[in-house]
Length: 413
Image (cartoon, rainbow, N blue to C red; front, side):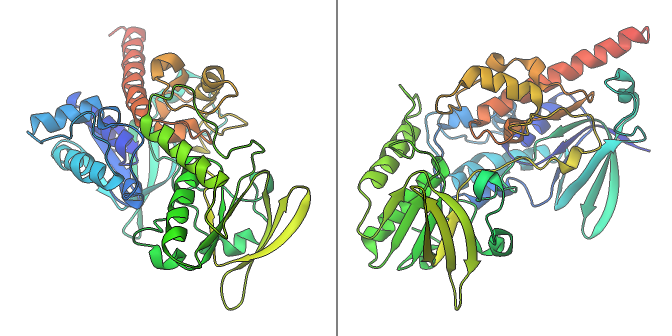
């Protein structure tokens, strides 16, 4: 049985940074991605990032590309997702392939110890004596890979929240899920025909919903009969609360523009605060019949499209058989969740939190050598910045080094 040093789940920005660090350390590592390298970034490629390139490039990854004489974007450049992917992520993956195994179209379905059950050797370092077993689905067949350490960098983009009351499905939402857009659409570009001269219900109160609202407002001003209702569950006087002295101008500008759309919507459009989606039904011959609760009453309405930008949550099915302590509120690892609560308080979420503030020890779970890194480590908390993920990678490698040194010491090596 061949045992890899490290298995990385997810070939996005954080997974590739981990692969770059593994390559420098000379580790036998493999990266799995069910779709392909940076497929999720590709899915929102037309969107501009809030932060400049210097905050989105990993230190190890950038060093790899400099060694390959790749011309990197300037540190202050604000890139679209597509530009970030083509100018940084894809070249990085290509540069790593000679030293790291990158398996695209390979989805990890389960991670467990080779033989320990979830309830055995509770909290014991003895669990590290057995490698992890990863069940992988690839090209219609199942294979298994064994590794001494696992980094879950699979993110949350593929697991949108439900749009109904309390985070559960609204009545009928399960049946309509395939017809509802849960990601940020492109109504001014590739998806213009889906939204032009149509009536859209937009649900959400974060930056994703704000981005959609701004685009729909621009489309409504350009194309007659384009209308939308923006329904957010918060009861504030604006949909997005401003971060005082926001160091990210792009984010500040987005907040300002979205709040202006809510205050002065185009004709036939509106913003509703304190709204909840109660029910949704597919209508004949098309569109949706919905029930919204707003201002203490139920409003029945009809829309051609529904966009539910209501956030994402981690898929914990991968590690159900491991000893992972997750937060009852965010579903993220408990150590990180508690540290985030201490850093953020109850104000608007700010993604400019570095791992030093959270503490490297927060990355550890009761399962030795298993780490949840990147956006997935924040669970339902959307205040994640790529830079934090890169710092997490460095912290996880540091912890692995400490564990290896302790093991050598215990064995008298």
